[in-house]
Structures are given as C-alpha cells and as structure tokens.
Image (cartoon, rainbow over all chains, first blue to last red; front, side):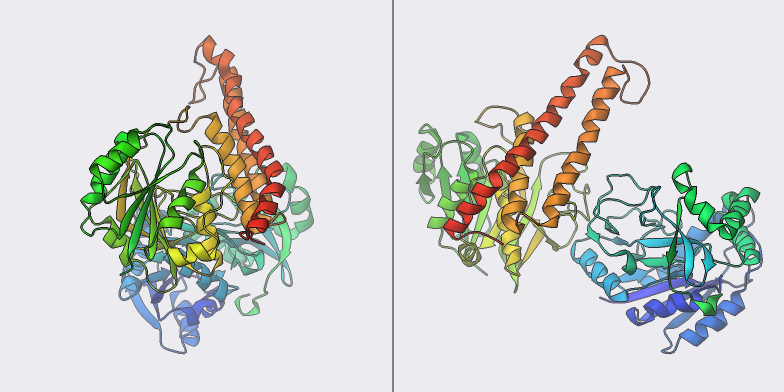
Length: 279
Length: 327
C-alpha cells in the first residue's frame, strides 16, 4: 500500500511532533501553505516558522512544498479550508493508494495500530478511515490536560473527519468526505456525542492508541490568535468562548466537577505526552 | 480453477426452484455437479427435477421445515467438487457467477461469496464499508447487495450466495445444526468457524445472484415476530457456540440487544402521545390505542434472547459430543 500525506503549514505548535509521529509511515508529504502568509480569514500566519520546523523533521526529503493562494475575501473560512485541503489531497494522491490527513496539532501515539486499522479498512473495501482522537482542551500542569469526555467522565473519541482517505477522494467539508468509512472507536459503541448513538463501530482500540489532538493546548495569546484564523472562527471568536477556556484552564477542578451538570464542555483531567518543544 | 458443486436446499417452492435451475443451466461454465436437497412434503419439486433436469442430483429428506442447516449438511455429504457453493432456491445466478466465484479462490481463501440483489433502489451503494462484518458489539452486518467495486475481505457470507472449500468444511465437521426457525444463522456459523482455521473469506461482487425473496412455505411473513425471535435466539447461540460462554463479544451482544429495545419503547411512546413520525401532533385514535402493540416486537426479541441463553448449554454439550465444538 503506497501512503502519502498532506499537511497545512499554518500553526507551528506541535507541528514537528505531529509530522514526526507518522513520518515513517508515508513516502511523501505535501506541504500546503498560503504563499502570502494569510489565513482563511485574512490574518497573518507564521508560515516561514512552520516551513523551518518541517525542514528539521524532513530527514529523508519526503516533504514537497506546495504554495497556493487560499484567502479569498468574503468566502466562508470553512470553504477555504476545504479548497486548500482538496488541492493538497489531489497533489498527495498522485502515486498513492491512501493519503493521511492529520492536522499539525494531532499526534499519532501508536503508528502500528493506526497502520493495522488502515490495512483492515483497505481490505474491508472502505474509502476512509475514521480513527479516534482524544481532544485536549487545555494544559493544566506538566503532562496534565483537560480532555473532552462523556458527561460522567469516561473517555470519548472525537472524529474531525477521516484521518486517512483513499487517493482521489472528494472532500465535502474540511476533512470530511461522503465515502464508505471504516470506523474505529474506543469502545464497542459510539463514544462521540456528535455522531448518532447507533453509529457503526468496526473496530475498537485502547484509548492509549488514539491520536492525541492538542487542539486548544496553547498559551493564552496564541489561543486567541488561533480562534481568529480557524475555519470555525465565527463560533470561536465569540468572547465567551475564550473566557470559558481561560476560566476552565485556571480552575480545572471546578471544570471537572461541573461537567455532569453542563449540557456541553464535558471535561476531565487526563495525562498525555508533554511536548515541551511545542510549548 | 477449482471444480464447483452447487447445492440448493428447497422446501415446497417448485416454481422458484425450476427457474433457479434454468439460470444455472445457462451458466457460461457448467458446474461440476448440481445437488438439490428437497424436504418438501409433496412430490411437485421432485417431479420437476426428475422430468426436466436429469443431470441434477436429488437428495430427499423428511426432516420437516425449518431445517436449513441439516439440509445443507446433507448436500455437503454427497458433493464431490473442490468447492461447495450454496445458493437459495429463489436466488438466480448470473451467467458468469460460477466463473467469478471460482476465480476468487486464491491462496489462504477458505470461502467466497457474492452479491445477492434484492431489487431495492440504491442497494448497490447501501452499507459500503460494512459488508459482511461481525462488529465489536456482537452484531453482524449484511449489505450483501452492495458493490464495493473490488474483491474485499469479509467476516461472514450470506447463505443465498456463498461457497467454501469442501476440504475446509469437512475439516470443521460440516454444517452445524440446531439453528431452528426462519433466521437460521448457520451461514454465519460456517463462516466464523472457517475463519477460525486462519483462512480468509472474500466477497466477490461480480459473482451475482438475483434474490427474489419467495414467500415462506412454513407460514408467516419474511420479517415477522417469529423471525425476530429466532434472529435473537440463534444469534446468541451462534456467538456462544463459536466463541464460548465467557466471550466478551457475547456479553456485548446481549447489551447491544437490550440497548436496541429503546427504539421500540420510543416508538410506542410516540404513538401513545398521539404524535406523528415527524414529532408533530397528529395520527388517529386507532394509532394511540394500538401504540403499545409495537412492544410485541420487543417481547419477541427479549424472548429470543432468553431462549438462546437457555439453549446454549445443550448445544455446546452436543457440539462437543459430535466433535464440532469450538472453545
């Protein structure tokens, strides 16, 4: 099976750890970035910093730079997100059977498990691999994080979109694609509240093998910037989103104790690798 | 290419069997042999076979209705081909069905199945990615009408269109019986046991049958309460016989089955509340009064689960005695 990947160089946080975690699984990595250093919302991006970080990781010369222009004033950021991903995916599809599409703050903890699932997805006739990610909300201490969970504190997976798709796949929205999926979860029944409760689970992996998504694990000034350039900026840039993040980060115990009583933002304290280089 | 014996089990559906045999006769490659296993209480089926299909080998039995596994075993016992293919009497093969089936037997392949088209709109794309799976929650998926466009690996095959190496079937002790009723599960039982031998099962989408779903000759409708009862009963038995009492997949299945009852409760409650399926008020008095009838389905399924649990000990004891027990 020939595997390629694409990354979008926009956010240097965790970028090296992310790419390094699956570097040996792929033959080529298409690095997509905005040539003008603009985000989908028009803000400035530290593109050169990202490219410099990638150069350090790319010891075998697998990275192929692919600049483009993805900021279109007035266009929905999520649409620009999809356009950029599709362009990168199309380029990465050349000569590949499957293309990995991890964001640069998603770190693969068990590449062997991931690869096994991908092999089984291939043999089952699926065109996408939905692989679970643990979604980290913020860092609250050395190696300790607030992590999204179920209302009563059990591990929950999040599925931002298939983390690998068959080459030539057409994306619908951001990473999501309307293709037959092989869905891996953390228990035999769906654990992601955003999916239907009866969503099919083809395979179960331990939580320790899930991808770790350091989604909102950033210093305060960076998380504010990230909310501004994200494809979800309309939602994230509301002041209460940042205020809540700040409150929960400073008082994690209260965030956890209040979880069963909230309708959203169910959080627990958990451990994950502390990637000092990124912080 | 391996030689293929085709086994068709039938019970009192002579017209369907005739058409089934006529389609087989038009195959691009003639099967090694065709075996019809007939348990009909009258002579109509046997008369047709003797009069119009003199090349077909006829095996007669009087085990009665609801004995599909036992009938398959009778067919297997007389088959002599390298591969034994089973099709239903209401499953009509495409001209090149047999060629595609036989060609898929590569190294390490213990069984090959194909598509069974039911004539439903969109069935070719429904369930792609979930064809013939045994899921971690203990349930199984079908979707055997879907066309993935390539040969894929599956966990189990559909009785209407499946085949296995004869040597492997003999190695696992043949087809296990004691799966009564209208949802027999013996096809999945064979499949899972073949996989336990370390062999692969593949789904070849070009090996097509058209499954016309003939009416049962044993009374009742295709997916009635009786079907729901036997579906649960035999599934519990299947998992316990194949993986053992303590298998996690059995516990998960029991939990999955209980969880799924919520759907019936919700539906009954919705009807009693005088709501339409879109959640708005509506529906007649009759709908409200008959709302709880939906729970009969739940009762059938829960009864099936219980009956399955009760039947496990006896079935496993008999399996061991007959040398077809699994752990």
